[in-house]
Image (cartoon, rainbow, N blue to C red; front, side, top):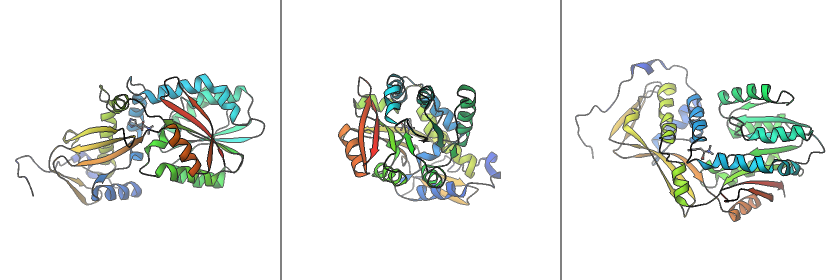
Length: 335
Ligand code: AVJ
């Protein structure tokens, strides 16, 4: 069925006609996601330069409790946490999804203070944010040995396997573990586990279950920063794939399901419309109120975390949490 309206169905966008060099992996993922039902786009593509900046703004929002809570956990329990890393011999401190490193610097300072013998290996999907991190580390912690890797987690694990073979402590903070689909969290921990030896450790940040309203608000802030972050994905596709998404014709929508423990975020098409990807010679049609799924954010119970670890061959040694039990950094050892 089609609704006939007077509104133009496509939006010619002169600016984007010249996209010639595009990332083939991005193009393949986007076309696959937008030609399936329901439509989806991977949340890993949020983090271009503008998206990384918007995420930094999200972390400052009054509604967005995870970063602030984890920061406090690390700050108040840094010595105890670092003690669990085993400081008698050299290790690679590998951080997956390092971002701006604001929280990690607490641990880095503590480890330097304790005279630990280690090298910091930050990994992030955003090369921009890594450059920013490297230069800030150079000025703030000049004694630190660092080698960074830009790329997604799976490419990173492959690179690490061949380049960082010594003892390891892997950091996966910020509840990035919550971003996977279905069993992706377990599968990813299993991937990490394959790379580890018996003496290695993993510290993972989990957002815990809490009042569903608190969770929902964290992903739908009053100032609209999260909405801008979600919509920026379409801006990126306009720029990088020559698409002509009209951002005014899509809206950010998010909801938390307390049974599943998952926040799901969407971009909803406000009308029937067609979007043209000029660089790809491809068109995608949207029905009125059709949604693109853009992100999952899982919230965990402590029992789920232990079970998840067990299935991945990791034993939870210690839970570091805040007084409200909003968030937990969990230290695992290899089973
Ligand atoms: C970066 C994955 C931890 O899921 O809380 C924040 C991303 N999305 N607001 C999260 C995000 C919308 C964030 N992580």
